[in-house]
Amino acid sequence: MSVLSTLGGVLNRLAALGPLSGIAGEGGPGAKRWVGEGNCTAVAAVLISSITLPTAAETISEPVALLQGLDKITARVSKFEASVGAVARFGTLSIRVRDCEKNPPEETPESAAFLEIDEMRPGDNMARRLFSGWMFASSPALSALEHPVYDVNLLDCEAASGSPRAASGSTAGKDAR
Image 1: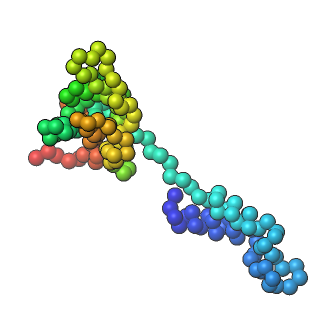
Image 2 (image 1 turned 90 degrees about the vertical axis):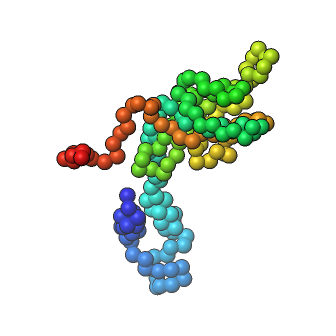
Image 3 (image 1 turned 180 degrees about the horizontal axis):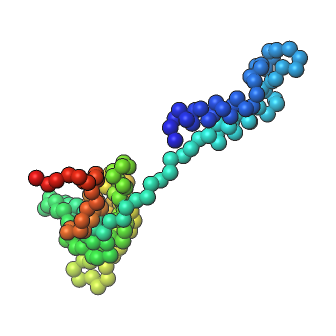
């Protein structure tokens, strides 16, 4: 809904309340008063009812998360893919992606993935859970892995390599040259 049509709807609803025949203290006997007659409540109700909140667009579920890992000791930066449901390894970390969601192309770019990151240290029989939660590509510090040696960040959610991508425009009637 455009701003102009919303404003037009608000003005039509205000006009339905009747003429603005007076301000408190003005006008003669029988003049409409805004204060003390409940009209402020009516105006507030009209304004609140005409506010439309943007609806959240459906996200696109992608099967692969593109992650970036940093080994702080060696300063090695690695980009790697992790399929949803599968375990990816980075150093002593095992990373399982439970879900990877991406906004549609017409929305603000954002990718989010639910990650479970465990560490298996040499000599330990049990993995220790370091992180479990959503990571966001646009705000890596919002929900970050806290580890003295490793950093892991989400870069993007993408289609599996080899799977066809959706075309962003119509190709009807166009020849490949």
